[in-house]
Length: 121
Ligand SMILES: [Zn+2]
Image (tube, rainbow, N blue to C red):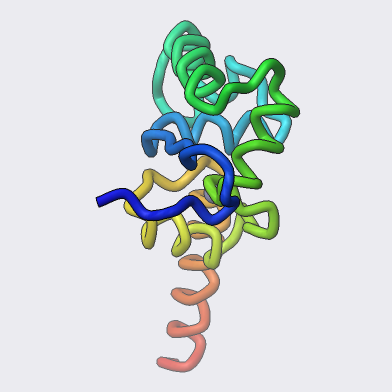
């Protein structure tokens, strides 16, 4: 069964988790090269995923794709990256956390370990 789309317009577009990650990183200003590095995939693959998601969204440009994805609820413009909350949000969505969130999570775990050590002594 297909429910009505929240916007009331045509069918709500959806992206694969990989396409969503690529768009999210592109929306953060990352280059295709940086996105590839973050996700552990080739720059060419990033290009292919971008073309696919543009087509799915009916987007002409990257800003257009970001705008459409936010409107469709695929991207959350309020979502934060780069800390423990961002990391947890990735995990909750069953995604591989982005590089910024991994860095934030590692810092968070370091702090927690340091705090535990401090109270143990
Ligand atoms: Zn992230």
